[in-house]
Every structure is written in structure tokens, then in C-alpha cells.
Length: 222
Image (cartoon, rainbow, N blue to C red; front, side, top):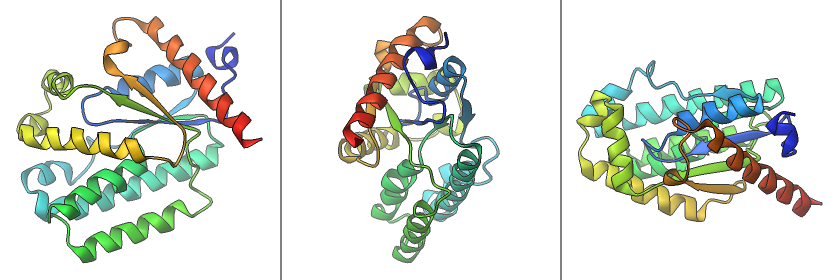
């Protein structure tokens, strides 16, 4: 019996993985997709034409970067809709608007006009029938020290050159964002409580919790 069937997870479920840089979203996405027999949806980092420029000049490129991410995520939402669900999604569109775009506007990296344009596009997108809201958002959390260690191990040049203060601010903003997030149910997982790389069996307790939360949500809707 597949773990999806064992824990009564619907085959059309959409589960989104959220969390700041370095918490292991991609590893969790792949691990859950393999265990549940779901498709994956990843953000396109390596092919992003603005990312390197953005890390060198936040003010000049923040609007371009956020519009690019918004467009790519909406295309992914449409693809998930067309397949009828059954996806694990690496990072949510909610993080783009609730954390990144808001941060750059508040810090003066995005003008009022640009921010209004961005939020208007976001609001229009989430109101379309092509936007399947997740059945569950899994939030990966950890201490700032653990996250910085993971960023160093990953070794991406543009991340290594980014000031520590930026990662500290992102950590703070993510925690603030998730504490008020209510677009769908949330399962919080501490990155110290499992190791999918060294122990593939640690995925089953996570799937059990996913099944329980989806089931409880279904009961509340009745």
C-alpha cells in the first residue's frame, strides 16, 4: 500500500512547501512527491534572468524580479489546475507578495506605483479559476544559525556574497508572515526534527501528520 493510501491523502491534493532560503524546500518537495506519487512544481531559479542582477542591486531589480516570479508561479498554478492536482509545490505565491514584495516596498527598493501594480496583478491572479489554493502549506522552520549553516554548505555564489543582515531580516519576516497566514491550513516542521537525506524513513511520520491535518480540515468543512 502506498503511503498516500495508508494515510488517506487525496490523489488530487495540492501541498505547498514554504520557508526561507536554506531550509530544504527542494529536498522536502522531492521526498514527498516520491513517497506520495505526486508531481513536483519547482521555482525556476537557475533560469531566472534577474536573480544575479537583483543580488547586486536590490533597488534597481526588485520589481523586475517579483514580476518574473509572479508570472512564473501563475503559469505553474495553471498547470496544476489543468492536471487536476496531485502536486507538491516548492514555495508559494503567497510568500512572494506577503514577504518579498512587501519587504522591498517598505525598504524603498520598490516604488509605490510599482508595488501597487504588483499587488493588483496578484489580486487578479488569485481570483481566477486557474488558481487552486493549497490543501495544506508545510512551513519549514529553524534557527537563523542552522539556516546560515545550510546556506554556506549549499555554496551558491550570489548567496555567499549576500550580507548576513539580509538573511536575518528574511528569517524575521518569514516568522512574522507565517504567524498570521490563514489562506489554507499550515503544518509547521522544524528542520532539526528530520533528515530526509540521511534517513529516507523519516518521511513517513511527516506524511502521517499531513494526512491527519487534511482529514481534520475536511471534517471541519462538513
